[in-house]
Structures are given as C-alpha cells and as structure tokens.
Image (cartoon, rainbow, N blue to C red; front, side, top):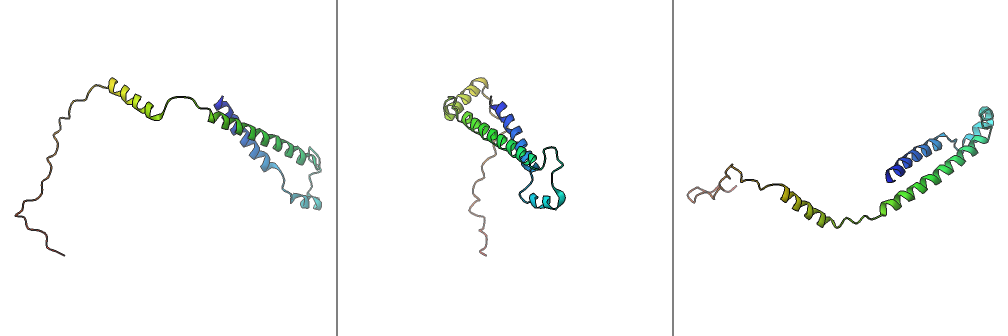
Length: 125
C-alpha cells in the first residue's frame, strides 16, 4: 500500500508541476490587450485559465491528501523489539553459525622496546 501511494504521489507531483508551468502569469493580461490574446484557443479567452486553475486546485488537494496518508502510514509502529535486542540476537546467531576461527599462523610483531641507555640523546635545537 505504501509503495502504491508513493508512486501515485510522485505522479501527482509531476502533474502539478506541469500544470503550474502551463498557466499564464497575471502579467499576460496586458499582452492580450495589444492583440496577442487567447480568444482563438480551444477554451476561449477565459476558459483555459479557469479550467487550468480548477485542475491545479484538484491536483493540489490530491497531493496534500496523499501526503497526509503517507505521513500516517509512516507513523505506524511495527513492534520488532529494540535495536539493542535485534543486534544481540544477530550476533548470537552469527556466533552459532560461524565456527571458531583458528588463531592466525602469522606471528605477531615483537614490540619495540625503549632504546638502550648507552644511545646518546638528540641534541637540543
């Protein structure tokens, strides 16, 4: 259900962006007064503006409804125990499944001891 709503949410968001970009701004009315009006369009001079604004309002309402639904689904808690319990159980399972590893055959490097006392100290700078 969550993935279906998420896919629908993305499609509605893309549609809403496209609808907003298709609409004319408020400054387009001045250009219509000088002969570049939209009277020859399919919807008429004012029909496209009201149609696009209505569809945009419906898409915006749908966008907010899906957003609220996704937020509600995201708050549903599935009781899986605490993170600490899940980590400790995982470690126990791995310890049971994996046999003990033999000690490495590579010998450890001997620790370097302090230089002998007869080595002269560095001269002061």
